[in-house]
Amino acid sequence: MKKLVFATNNKHKLEEVAPLIKSHFELLSLADIACFEEIEEPHDTLIDNAFEKARFIYNRYKMDCFADDTGLEIDALDGRPGVYSARYAGENCSFQDNVKKVLLEMKGQKMRTARFKTVIALILNGREYSFEGVVEGEIIDQQSGTEGFGYDPIFRPNGYAETFAEMSLKEKNKISHRALASKKLIDFLNAI
Image (cartoon, rainbow, N blue to C red; front, side, top):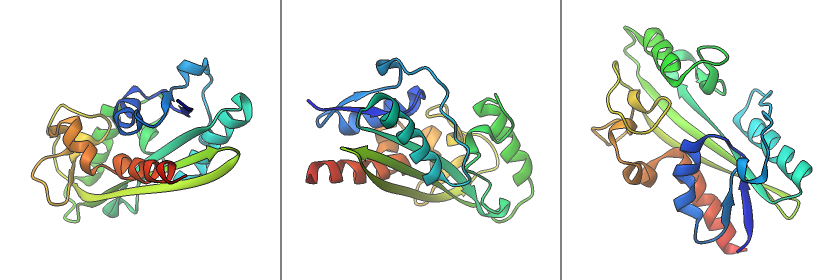
């Protein structure tokens, strides 16, 4: 089975993606290849940050790999937190710190529309490809649910009564931004 590195240390992301590609590749994490360095995300776009991580792994370890970057874009906040979603409340902040900051900034807002966007950058046999997944929804005014991570307790996807944090991983994986981008990745890998 061909090895494919997912350039992340985020165990939640690994748990979400692993079931989607396990039959096609042996999925390796950064820990599996003994990469313990913090890979910079210096860019202003999700795609540039995803390729920054993928190129770092490919150039250093000479292994096929993919990386993702995900952002929550809130219309009332002019697209923030966006590319800064993971560190919106500052460096070394927690998921909870980020959620609290968003809820504070959204207090009293009538427009609640938002979207989660994931971009996956793949480097396979030295060639670069990208895939995007988007799920539209809204920001609710208080946290609900205990599943998932990040902004899941305050994001309700369109057409659903539950937040991502109220859904099981199996339910979320049917509709999430990461699942949609991962499906495009899998479809591409299956076609080659």
